[in-house]
Length: 408
Image (cartoon, rainbow, N blue to C red):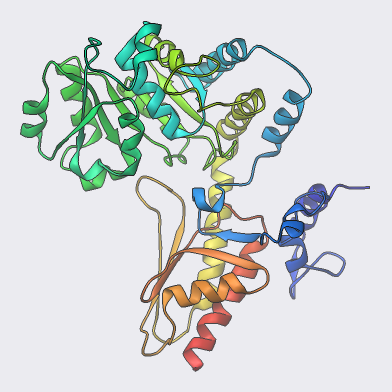
């Protein structure tokens, strides 16, 4: 017998006719079904699953795991290995794949930032690693510079190490802020358009003053080239999420960069205790799974995948054309979540529902659907985290919700 996962793959490749795929199997039943015939734990718990038309949000549990990642995870679960040896070997493979000096698997991009910060502060001194976050009197530097527009919640990852975050806005302020206590210059890649200093200028100033530079690129794949763009540009440390576009473990991430800094960062990482990172553990399954997911992503057919996303977005957009008062915009965000995105907005005098109201309608229906945005009169939709076929359900349900609101 075919597993349900294989059955779905085969059926989803067949032509769509009148809401039915193949031999009379309703599309909704397939698209909303679990990927394999497992015990239905979520139903037992009363936890509702949904079609993800929003994106790779942590609150929505990120992404669906690649088959290669699941295979690696299950394989690793049957064996014991030494964690440091596994990190060494996987790190070497990832560094070669991503064209950088060194790499390590972390428990998310936030963890990668904390470990990278710790490595910059301590070097290869394990005694200093034990003293973080208490930096006073240790000889460690105490300040990190960041653009004001980049100083969002994720900067807490470096503050975990006890450093003071210094905000700047202009190049002149940046140069004045650098002093003997400056340990790191932190750049948040998704917020580059919000600041006055771009990634190249930020790095150039860091190099001129011999200050290590870190770039948080958590949500910045695709495109695949970003995985090596910033280390090759010269950034000393670069951080990625493992559970977004890479579709690896949601609780894993990557720290890439200079070999000496990656080695130093691992002094604060498990299995070592009495460090700031002891609770930021990744198990052998996640380490191996992260490598497998990354390898599958890098070697994937990115052009084919992009065409699929474009087709899905166009299908949803076509489904709602003609609704009076509705504005349709298809675009690709320039940096983070760089995928085809559909923005719908409307005149609430003609379409009498709010964005949050439409979200509630989609959420409460069957199957449940989550979209992004919301508010007075708009929602935002992506398809890259859907199973093939689910875009048709989303199209039907959004059209139905907007037409009903327009008729009311």
